Image (cartoon, rainbow, N blue to C red):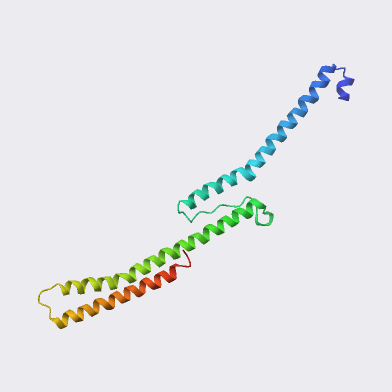
Length: 161
């Protein structure tokens, strides 16, 4: 301003130059702030929202990176770390559930096969009364094993349900 006054620039120029200068400074600060907000919050939150959709769809291999280094974590980073831990735990629970169902169905196949085979033997025409009683007893035993498996399955399943 002093230089413009000494050079004899008019009052209008002396008014417009500082206004233009401070306008540019304001625009620059606004753009810089907007860029930082986008990098620090918007992009990570969009990543987190996308990851949440993937987890809701059953994908438990999702990982969201934190914004800052481990020694400079902020609230958003802590939330992202908690989300990643939750997804890992959900994946573990899903694996346990799948293994449990697989094991139970495998264990149930043997008694069912026994019951089916002995029922078919009972339907044969040349089976003696003694054999029929033996087959019926084997069916009853296999049904008991199946019933015991189902009872154990329900007890093991109930805490997770």
